[in-house]
Amino acid sequence: AAPQPQPAAPSAAAEDRAVPIRGIRKAMFAQMTAANAVPHFNFCDEVRMDALMEVRQQLKQVALDKGLGKFTLMPLIVKATSLALAEFPELNASISEAGSELLVKGSHNIGVAMDTPHGLLVPNIKDVGSLTLLQVAQELSRLQADAAAGKLSIPDLKGGTFTLSNIGNLGGTYTGPVINLPEIAIAGLGKTRPVPRYDEAGALVRQSIMQVSWSADHRVVDGAMMARFSNAWIGYLEKPATMLLTL
Image (cartoon, rainbow, N blue to C red; front, side, top):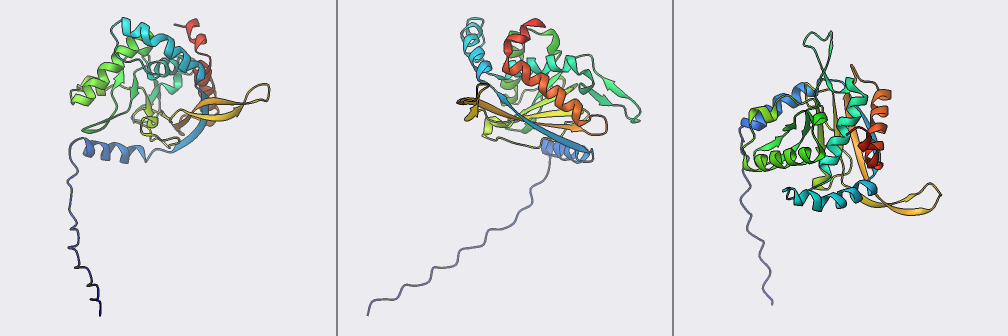
């Protein structure tokens, strides 16, 4: 008779282990615990990115000629955010410790969340409203390089007034971002994807669409303000030539 198969020897069970929460992860623990005590609300929309992608293609070589190795969509998005904040300055704010005042910030210090070897960090580009598009791109490039090398300074991480979190880099579409205290609003940017949409004439066309997910502090921001801000921001991205009027 054929030999009967023998049962496999049981493998050793994997052991549980305790991983200390230290450093940046500990700071994130405290930050997110505090932020989740704030009543958030979410607002989502989509952006047609075709025109902005065309502008990026036109500027890539110009940026390269001026010493910038890589020109992405993010500097354009950061600049559009600053222009929209100029129209809705109360979103560029924090709440006083006593909760009695909304502290509207004069500078647009726009943070860009970065996945680094040391964890999630949010360095910010200082005073975006006073910078040219090229200067925004150069500063973003510096922050990304320093983040990857673990060389971000304390000033790079302090003083932010509004945050952009680009989950699209990892393939995500929708998110529910948590406010980066003491700020009162944040955007989660999804991956830009080609999808079918109807144009103004009713024809089915291919468009490049990015989803945006906003979160805001509902104690001082209502849905109408967030929607109007989002519409202004989308307007700059979908018709990037309009940014020239205020640059």
